[in-house]
Amino acid sequence: MKKKLLSVLLSTAMVSALLVGCNGTTEEVVEETGEEVVAEEGGEEEVAEAADEGKVLNIYCWNEEFKSRVEDHYPGYEKVDATSGKIGDVTVKFNITANQDNAYQNNLDEKLLAQDSAAADDKIDIFLIEADYALKYVDTDYALALSEIGITDADVAGQFQYTKDVVTDSNGNLKGSSWQGCPGALIYRRDIAEEVLGVSEPADVQPFVKDWDTFLDTAAKMKDKGYFMTSSVMDTYRTYSNNVTSKWVEGDKINIDANIDKWVDDSKVMVDKGYAGTHGLWSDDWSKGFFMDGKVFCYFGPAWLINFCMSCDQEGSVGSEGQWAITEGPQGFFWGGTWMCVAAGTDNPTLCKDLVLTMTTDTDVLREITTDDDDFTNNEALMNEMAEEDGFGNDYLGGQNPLGIFAKGVSTVDLSNLSAYDQGCNEEFQNAMTQYFNGEATKDEALELFYTAVLEKYPNLSK
Image (cartoon, rainbow, N blue to C red; front, side):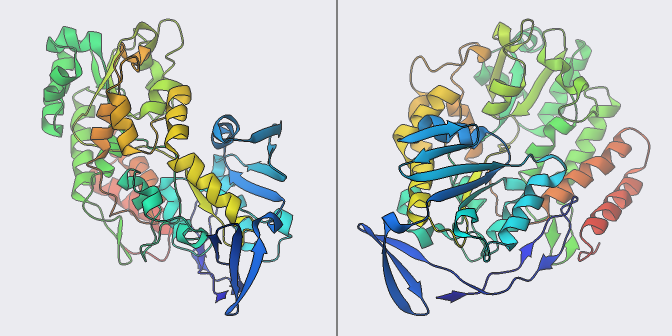
């Protein structure tokens, strides 16, 4: 049947271009019926064997993470070289473009625009996206509704709701699926908690960080003992921003939610009183707290931050001493995640369906990924089950099993206020407010800097 592709929000180096129209195209909408695939074209049904589908499966991504998950956990996958493999007689090609300077999105946009005219073996079949820019692709027809390849609501019923909300379009169609959940928690040092608060176990520490006002009170206690509450005020931003009650853009007007404004006021207190710095995440100053002499009480993050980013395997680090632990903190949040989208025009709908179902809904595969790769995987019942299992403790966390706390924290996340402008607005807001925190601008001046930067990125908006 004929289906006109929606305009896509093309990215530039600053992710700022307006909606661009795209010519209508004829695309196959497939549904699995036993061993056959039924395709509708101009109202007429054509029957094609699944074996007649494409012989090259192109997957677009920005790093090796998904490739390694497929290599290690997809049954029957045969690795050929660093960027390709085989599934049966189908060649799988991973097209990897790094995220730096928006290169991945720029490349993906270019390829999606050329999808109609691309040779069969060059068509995108699956592409990966992140939450910060998910709606840019989800709200277009470049990503198929999963129902169009035969994936039902029942197939994804076990997934955490927020992971589905991220990739649900404005018409209620699910456009992607993820094998991982990335709920966050407050990651704190046991030894500092014991010294300052007189307790060290998660249930005992939680009352000291149960809300933001209590968090500030505890920060004062930490300062009195010579410790920073967090490394930087940027550590808390995502937690506040995940708990907004309105969107960054309402209609065409930029909107600053009350919880974002509270982050500004609380952060100014934190900086002025010496409870935290203002350096950026991933900076050398930020990571000093990963080590025992770093004097930082807590960070905010998901499982991947602990396991892969906090230098836990290095001698002298907090993790190597088993001195980290996690508790819920003031508010639930998530950070990161990768979603699989199936591209309109794919000539491998049956294999795409199987990849999505196997990698993101198969309980045995998800358990294997959690066990082997330390991913918090996207099945609520499985994570709750594994949270109760003996022997699943994390050595970096002093033997604590973190899965239950991660699952509890993310259960409160409401993503109904996502917008296509989130990435740009979040980045520019933090940049501008850093000048206020550092005394280089008043709050009003920092807000003007923010508005100017956002309107330059998105000239279709207004203050």
